[in-house]
Image 1: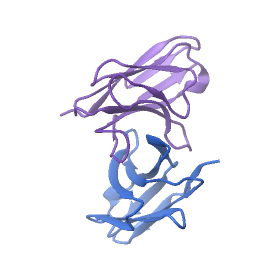
Image 2: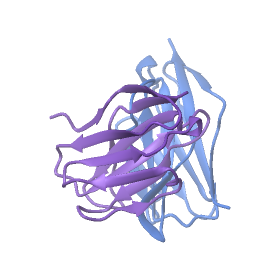
Image 3: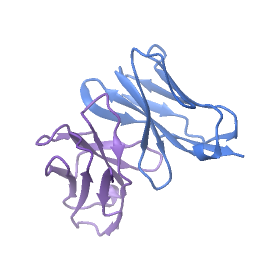
Length: 113
Length: 113
């Protein structure tokens, strides 16, 4: 039982390049989330998907797009990477939105030069 | 503006003692509050959830209190062990945005033998 799996674990990009971060969960959860974590700051929600077929913006959505491919998979795309997007990105899932624990992957460490 | 504050200074504590962490918030009316543990290089792991109508919640050596009047949660680790060394994050839901969590920056706990 893998839980939440994120790929890749590490990535270095040049400014202006695009990339998709992948996330898959095997817990049959309805809701999925993307966060970024920067030093000295709390996790900040980028986008979330309350259920398959829906997505909604979080606190810091600019520069990102998401796709809820199916119930298991939720991808995050950087269309034109900027140095300000250097961060650790975490994907999470929960049974339902709200009032539920969230289960996190181990993150993608992304550096943009 | 909405704000969640956790002590940014590391808490150094001797094995066997009780560690107490605080989470203060302003301009929120959360329906529930969660606590997570994060180890270096790993994603957060859910520990406890407490609802606004609950004063206290326990799980093994962990205890959480939630005072909506003071806008504060306290997280206690009793009989602390070196394995409890980690960063602890509090997270609040935003009641008008069901399922969206706001995280504090976390407090590092270091338990020495």
